[in-house]
Picture 1 (cartoon, rainbow, N blue to C red):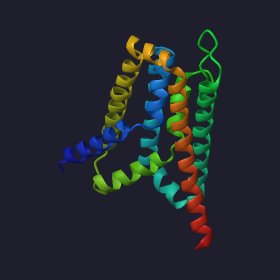
Picture 2 (picture 1 turned 30 degrees about the horizontal axis):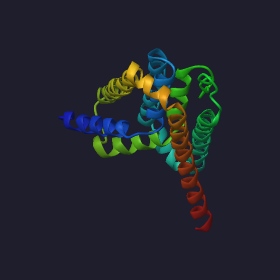
Picture 3 (picture 1 turned 90 degrees about the horizontal axis):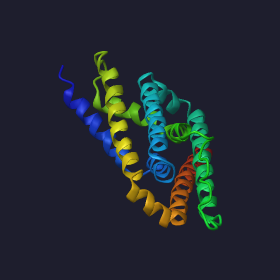
Picture 4 (picture 1 turned 180 degrees about the horizontal axis):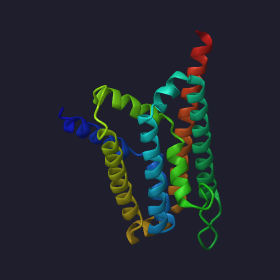
Length: 216
């Protein structure tokens, strides 16, 4: 059974999804530009660990369980929406705060650790487990060999590290950090607006689902 094309398809699907601008990109880029390369890479580590956790949970059947237990899936997504809005509001407050003669202290997005921020941002999207469950059903045969699943985990880990690590290296360059210092307020407001918009979009999806379920 030649499963190499299946693995290539999953890898392509993942890297294209990762490249779409979203909360992970915002958190990695923000920490890299406002703090340091080290903090940016710590945020990358959090994103990668959480991504692998969702993949492993999908392999274990949690994604299918979430779909069956609709109330649990909605509850997790509500928590995720609340977290994204919380982070966005903190960024917006930093953008609106008076800077004075120097830069105001950057807001803490999740505790004091960039790793935690990356971890929590990725974990705030339980759709990942459902997405990977669906991807496995489409791309893999029902009884794939045991070696396939560790290979998938390794592929996702490597690709996530390379992509988000590249973003961290880029946004932590002197040019990027100087640019941020010039337009810090606008970028804080933009990043905050993106996070709030994503959180509200998720909350609106939940509202529609609950309304449709109640009407049926």
